[in-house]
Length: 156
Image (cartoon, rainbow, N blue to C red; front, side, top):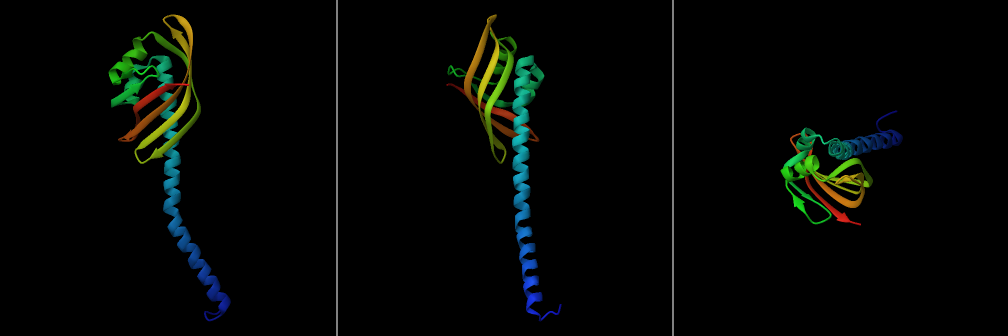
């Protein structure tokens, strides 16, 4: 095709438009992929946290929680990091199963908000017990890890 041919000019114009669109959209697709990856990593942190609660794994609980943790129970009781971990390790309620149901994860920069129905089974002072509460957790990315910064449970 010759340069002064209208078909050539039109093809060249569309090629330049496509290059421009790709140049503009590529960073946005990377941001979307990072956001999806962040949500996946936060979901994994939730799973690890609940597994550590079932297994009474103090090291993992310490690793997954922020030094500034505020942990709210559905009863209204609020604990700091050491109180929360002590409660899991030595408290009256010992979990045998925890399932987050209808979980959503929303990220914004270094903050993630997790919402779900917390279904748990275990023993409370030796008697079989079930838990069915709403939960909102806030994770913060500290260095390269997602840490639980806040949790508030509520009665359904």
